Length: 222
Ligand SMILES: *Cc1c(COP(=O)(O)O)cnc(C)c1O
Image 1 (cartoon, helix red, strand yellow):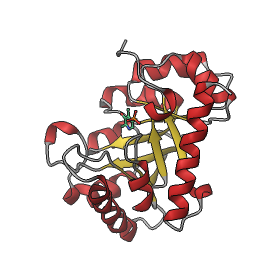
Image 2 (tube, helix red, strand yellow; image 1 turned 45 degrees about the horizontal axis):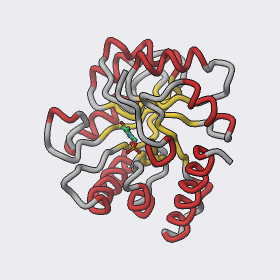
Image 3 (cartoon, protein in one colour; image 1 turned 135 degrees about the horizontal axis):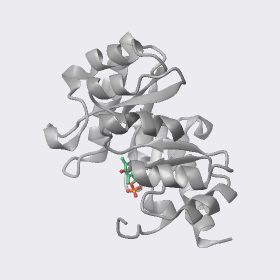
Image 4 (cartoon, protein in one colour; image 1 turned 90 degrees about the vertical axis):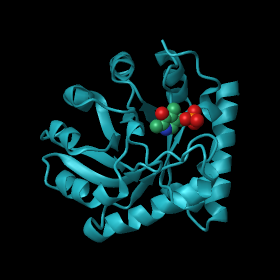
């Protein structure tokens, strides 16, 4: 098997081990391969290895790859900061946006076709980092639920660099529990990257966004 195939298999084994350690069924987890900065050819190789869910964080790059790979049945997950004026265009190819963090973006994403939405939590308290403050989670969820086409799936977070990942993900789990009191079906948790997906799984993550552990080192941003 290729090195890419070896890394994919190794990550999937580690995901399954962590799920079993948490008393969870690995089948309930969605592994998204984050392919940002890599060429479309790498995404095609991943698809040949059975990958269906891919993640991107920049609109122009994602749109170009989605167009080039439109013959494949891929689900594109948008995971980066999103400007409201790009929302319409992202909707053309994305199945899910994981980084919804403000009302103006919710409004800009309104459209008849269904789109899965995750509310990105700010775990740092730093307004420059993106994400909704914990106190604003409820009102933002209400706004998504009142908006045409948007399917509220749950919460998303990136663990801060200066906090133990397990502790950060425990805070995400608490936010998810609060969200489910007002939106019982919004039970998904998008959390866990190459360095911390085991901890995220132990705290209930359902959608793992894994890049370098599968793709190898990223080329510099183009
Ligand atoms: C790049 C990125 C990832 C994947 O990061 P790795 O450390 O390469 O696994 C996950 N989530 C978001 C939001 C990203 O931008």
